[in-house]
Length: 321
Ligand SMILES: C[S@@+](CC[C@H](N)C(=O)[O-])C[C@H]1O[C@@H](n2cnc3c(N)ncnc32)[C@H](O)[C@@H]1O
Image (cartoon, rainbow, N blue to C red; front, side, top):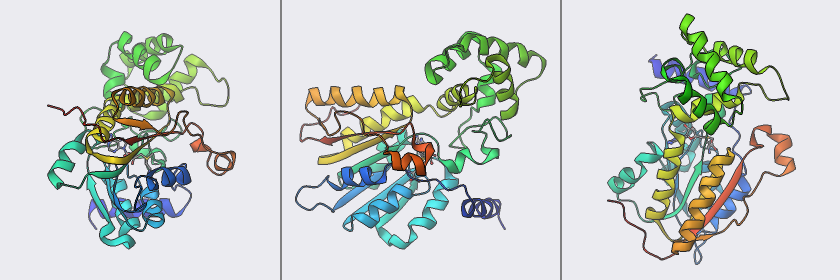
């Protein structure tokens, strides 16, 4: 059995137990993307640029019989699981490994038709979060890694052990919203002089010592979110995805973005508003859609999900150099 087969076998066991990624706001996503074609409501190619385990893609393919999906993800492990899940759809589902920032290159290389839809469901999959060895969780002890794409060079440990104190403080504040970021950064820099951070739980314990327990959320939640965003360059990736939407959607095609972070929701909101002023987007969600109470009861991880969408007009995009 190859290493990949062994790892997939473990994943299948895990998935058959409780760690399944439940796709968020499926009905809203299907409705937005399904309405992307006026004359023939179901035809067209939809790119799911954060395929994960293929939950949204499977629902789109089931609900829109004329649509096909090109699913991309930067994580080869989740991509293999999606491949199995989408197999019943035959050649209506194509998969490729790619970062969102590689999408423009990929779509040009594949010479795909102008898109009917582009979906980004940002952030981390439960399949990543619940696997201790991926290093995303402050509750499961694992290496301080957090790379969604294992080919990225920089891990969370590299940042925690190498960045200077003021850069760490800025990161925890701006990317995680940690208001006591300076105290945490100072403690991290002191502690790493004795022993560098290697494990998730070591860092989580230190943050808990500094901040104490307050409220329901673990005190390390914000610091871990900030590190994950930096490791995976999530801000830059989102901007690249928004640009790809403008360039590759056909007139009438719909961009749908799910965020889990108020800063990211703000970026999407401002991008769409600015595009609407230039005439390239018609905003479909003046206010972001939020999960219903029923969804939150069934899937508490959906709590910070926000969906924004816009329809591409026929105005020419600003072509990138
Ligand atoms: C929230 S999950 C998506 C779940 C998926 N919609 C489903 O229903 O199963 C996010 C996925 O996007 C991927 N991802 C996040 N940022 C990415 C990026 N910049 N490029 C490519 N994939 C990315 C992650 O690896 C993860 O599998």
